[in-house]
Image (tube, rainbow, N blue to C red):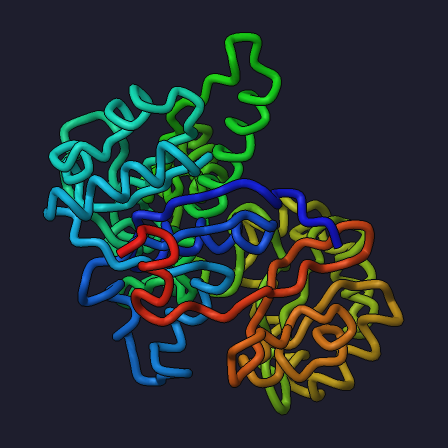
Length: 378
């Protein structure tokens, strides 16, 4: 297929998760991504076990479709060759180095845009480009804490819980990709000789954005949002239930679905009970409602409930582990688990299709410095 970013050259001054995940998104969309690494390599190469094909499995998951260049950024000669490559070849630079480091090295947006005004430069920061914490570093769990996410994850009375996937890092990668694509589009539409510009995204801004609905609920009520386990504030019934052989999430998020759910549970009278007549009523009386539902859900297996709920049109899903998710027929039908050239194992691919076709990986994650001579001539 004709990949939409074919011909775009990206230089990734990135490490860990957020910037590499952003670089991979652009690479999956067809861009040529040059990953610049320190001599000892991206720290994520060592984030294991498990290891896959010579690097941590985590690293392999977010660094395909790239070329690796080793460059000692504090060496003026090596840095100069990198700058020459950027000015000569690059459309995009993205970076998530320690705050202030790229400016110290002459690799910041102002310096590079002075040399090549058409460049799109993306800063992937921690706390954001301005403010009293702008110079502090940050990582996904810190931002899940600082951004309020941990305050609403888990169950009341228990210690704070981090969301398992690195949603702040990966979410920032998505916002970075959106910003870069918008800047490239603006450059193409520009009337001033294709001027580029600066895109700023950060882990804190992403974490705060994930909290948008909780923030709105707080601003509207003045009440601090609580932890709801597998449930959600403002909707009931809407959570996981223990069954005979597992756990099943049921999302009966409106009055019609609650009526159907009550019928499947053989308690039609619940939908006529004044305590549960509307969603606000059910939220106010959620503790009583859930106690009743929990008792009924424990009487049958996941499979039995899924058949009954599907027949009634009530949305539900079993709580699956990673193996069950990967082996499910829906996963296979979508072809989301893809063979990667040069990799001994398949990996989850880009969750986007164009005209019904998903882009295929072109290459596995590079070995450290695999393309240094090819790119920088050293």
